[in-house]
Each structure stands twice: as structure tokens, then as C-alpha cells.
Length: 237
Image (cartoon, rainbow, N blue to C red; front, side):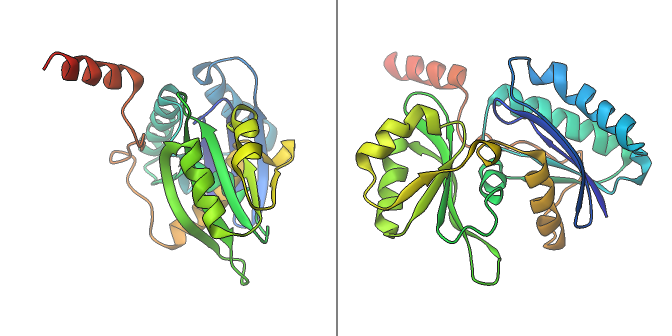
């Protein structure tokens, strides 16, 4: 089985091609340009370098949220367009699940944190069991950084943090954490389409996929514009 994987859910843009248990190619950029400028050119470059025939692709995997509203829309639209054009399914992988999957084999608790502004974070809690199976301890959610730190402390076990929220919240983590902790190294601490694709194989085997037409990103919360409008409406009541 061959999968093209996309991740534009945060600051990083990443594209990968995987076939069964092999990562054939991965192109990841964490630099300034908007994902609308980078995602398709990155895929085109991978196609050129690997002589990829898109008609041989069996599914499109995409980081399905949470994350940047604009980034998720770009990734979702790209996945839908490819899925519709090729008549293949889309596998939506929760963004923080894929982030945690970067740390396959870690023996403790894994806590991805993405900066969601206003002291909020997109996060979740994960681990790998003794058989190597990926276990969701706390599903992807949007919560205050203090709330997820409290949830980690309650588990009373070592934890590793990763994601673009680490540099934002590292001081808060150091101040409030009561269990042994570490921060993932740079090559594992951000979104990677390779991880999205690898986890997509697991999801596909479990029947967790959808038609391209049915795919929608999971934002987990209202956009800033929607929140501000709701606050104004509440104030005028």
C-alpha cells in the first residue's frame, strides 16, 4: 500500500510518501513561507525525485487537526483535491496524535503541545504499551497549559514534551511540573508527514478513513473571529 501524507497544521509544512513499512521520501520545511506556497511544490519535487506515479497511490493521509485554522484548511483542501482527482480515500490523523507518534518506543508519558494562543494549547497524552501499541491516554483537546500540566502531574510518571508550544510554555512547565520531564530533541519535536503517514497505516487497518468528499478538518474550537463575535453578542445581550 502506498500513501501520500501531508501536514500543514502548524508552522511546519511537510509532505511524505510511504509504501508499506518504508518511508520513501519526506520533505519538511519550517521557515516563513505560507503553506499555500509550499505544499504542492514540495509534493511535485518529491514526485520528480522519486519518479512517483500518483495513480499508484492508494490513500492520502493528512494531519486533520487541531492546529492553525488556515494551515488546516490548506492541508484539507489539498488532501480533498488529490483524493477526488485520484478517487482514493483520505485518512485524517489527529495532529497531536501524529506528533506523539514521532516518539515511538518512548517508555513514559508523551505530551505534545501546540501553541493555540491566549495561554491555550492543543494537546493530549499518549504512551506506547509493552507490545509497542500506540495508546491514547487523553484525547486531543484544547485546554489551558496549566490544565494539561496538572493532568500530567496526576499520572506520576516521567513525561516528554514536544511541539511548537515547548518554547512558548517551557518556563511554565518548569515552574509547575512535579514529575521527571524532558523536552524532545529538535529532529523529533515538530510535525512530520512521515509520522502522519506511519500512523495512517494503523488507522487504515482499523477502518478509520473516509471519502475525499466527506473529509473535514477538526478545529476543536471556534476561530478567533468567531470567538470575538460571540463575545460581542454576549456583551450586547
